[in-house]
Image 1 (spheres, helix red, strand yellow):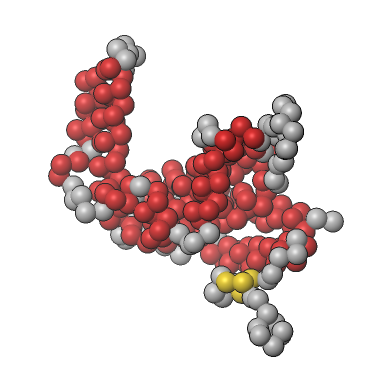
Image 2: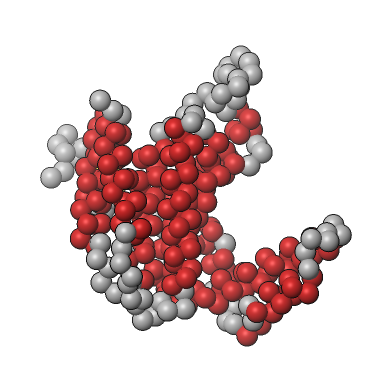
Amino acid sequence: MDARDGYAPIFDRLLLIYAESPEMRVTPGYQKVAHLAHGWFMRCYRGAQAIVALDREGYAVEAAGIRRSIIEHVVALKWLAAEGDVILDPVARAHARSAERILAAATAADWKSIDPIQMAEVIASAEADLRGSENDYLSLFAHRAAKYADVHTMPGYLAECNQTHACYESAMTYVTVPDGSPLFTPRTAVQQVPFATGELLEATIALQPVFVDPPWAGALAQLRADLLVVTDAVREQDGLPPVDWTTGTLRDKDPQGEQPR
């Protein structure tokens, strides 16, 4: 039996937590961004379902773009959880800048399907010039990850970028090594349920502060404990050192050869 099979029941239970929750009150300090919290969470929720569905059909590698999106939205939720309504200014200003770039590109391409007046109204509605700019740097993923995510987020994110963008690594997925023969299916594929489970758990944890006494807090704590047990079993199966989950560091042997207690 593969120890990774233990993630599936956790994933299935995570899918029910938010979807089956009764209407909840929004916590003071999150009133202005509750809609963002819901939307960003749904990107994680449906993205996790999507990569698992693609995996069943043999397209786990091709799901890299969705995995990258999930990572970005989990980090965004952690930012929102930490700062609450404060994030509205940089989000609105980034929205205005993005709309301006789209309008400029569409105008240069002479697109007739975009109404420049309507786009201008969208840009104006953000009221970017009236908002504080001191947190604009947090519109960039790297800055958000450095401040609100752990050190393991960026390596995984960059790996997904290499599978998403047109680069050497994205090509070599479909080429044998070392002879270079072309392949019509990827050389390797990783199970998606473990990734989907871990990221959806992180997203749900980040969502908790948005609501007053969410009814699933206890269930979520148990699911986190269950996930750590499964992860320990997977690491042992793969010959990897155990993790001290209180610190997030590897539990290497001490100089006397004994495992720390």
